[in-house]
Length: 79
Image (tube, rainbow, N blue to C red):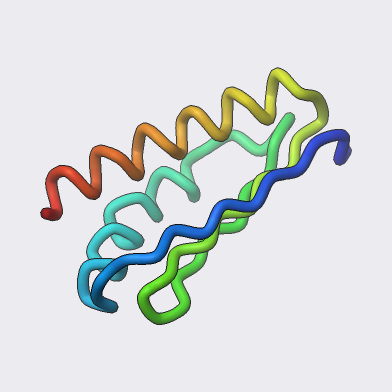
């Protein structure tokens, strides 16, 4: 399946804020269709790590765009 792959690490000032953002976005990860892209989304302390692999560049870009929108919204609402 894997044609493209990306890893994004986001570092926050506190573990609490990282947990709020992670918890807000996690339901989107579980509800996303996995037919053309797969994602790993985890929190390690103050850091959130997103890894996406996709069948093609278009699917990778679409998945990354969706995740970045969800993360941006979670940060804006959580802060």
